[in-house]
Image (cartoon, rainbow, N blue to C red; front, side, top):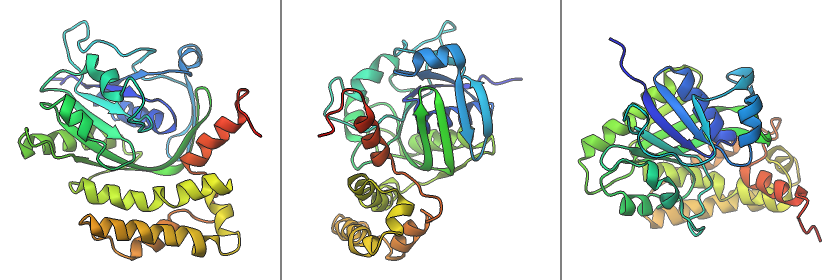
Length: 295
């Protein structure tokens, strides 16, 4: 007997979201509906062009369905979405909120919401609005960007940590099962590393060691990680002190991070790979916009 594939709605088909959709589709256990914005017309006519260190060069690739708006929760056969995967920037003060945007597609008590986003406490508005749904944490470590509409450049291996946020209204086993099922459908294609990580808060603090140091410092100096490491003592005087501040704050919050995470984080950005963090990419996009004030 052939079991139906998991229905996945994916919001945010940029560099990270498109590789996520590709991994889900390639595994054969999921069918992905991607909601596109600025790249919708290009993808509808030509598909995605993907240059990937793990998947190779792919032309004219499309998920099962591409839309320019959030669909209703049921398909023609009456099937709900099993997962809604959010790969957008975490900007909670923008109206409408992401919770409001995805609400029409959420089936209460069934759809698990996966937040592949950075930040702390990002689950709270989702648990408040959808108290009967599992909310899953996704911590992505990947160098993948949309360099033009529909063109994805994936230069560093995809590593994704998945675990359930604590929703006090749901049984822990239900939340664990939803997180582990997502690990299965994401990783079965064999082109990624997707791991179940139950201590999601500690994992998020660990990611913040990078996000609160390399990310803003590269954006402010306009130097990528390789250039930054080749420039004088910038790593010693700016990057490492910022990382130590994160460790200190995490400890105050009850999360003890090993001092070795500092060296590990620096080494995860090899000097010869010249990785451009997402915050620097975003700044460059704004500065190159025709409407930008570059004074």
